[in-house]
Image 1 (cartoon, rainbow, N blue to C red):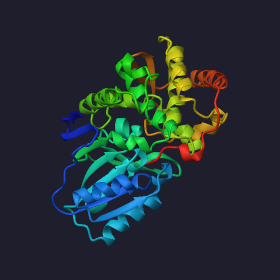
Image 2: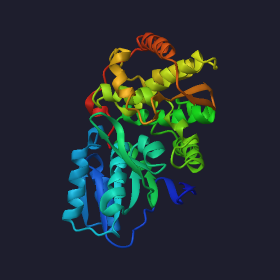
Image 3: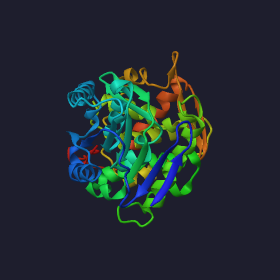
Image 4: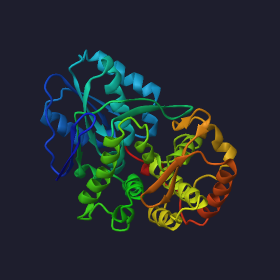
Length: 355
């Protein structure tokens, strides 16, 4: 087991491994969990004496105003008071939703995060960001709200289809690009059976923790974590949330690498193409740039009228600035050409991320 800790601005522990000791909070307790891991959730609830639980079907669609309202009403029906601790059990989407519920129910209650997917373990459960989507775009509503702790039980990864396992690790690969960590961008050995998986995940988590501690509310340094996400969120929006987040980010990283090369940086395109071949994702629809413009215009990283892009000039060297329209269009044409060379087959809906 690896024990990590975020120290700023609000300290809390992050444990990753097998057979974790999850603390029993004092006072009232309730659980919101993904139905895909209900057996694990029920065992945990019994062990921690959690009397009430709300199960939700997973997927990006769970981060909706309707589900958010349903969960708040459920908490109110249970007459849960302000000293309640929520246990949030699930993957990336449920982690985002659950944290936002905790941030806003009765103006804020404590919560403990129990991520059950690779995506949630290396990204969504870390850094205090919570939120939900709007029909107009992804993560447009949210709040910063720190958990009491994060407990990532690697046993829960056994519930994942292989494509989902891989898709979550795209965020770990991204952390490798940001930190200049060659180990993290070497995805070939990654598997559920690999004995180095715990250390790999802990290494990826450590990269994010260092950035979050330096810039908790995304004023400067933390914007690096958006590498690949600008195009990714547009692709997710244009596909009405049917493209898995990890797949969208992988394609977004390819586009970012093209931007870096166009700005005179070292060529990271071959590195990202290796990731995509390992991931073997479904090919994206051939959207025109105009098809994506409305989603890009609502991106959270927009300042005034300018949309800032995270541009990787090399491993461990990122710049953040607006990009000329002609450069964006040229790189997007090159992106479409490269994507068309990838061999792939459609991913069944059952293999999209469980949350």
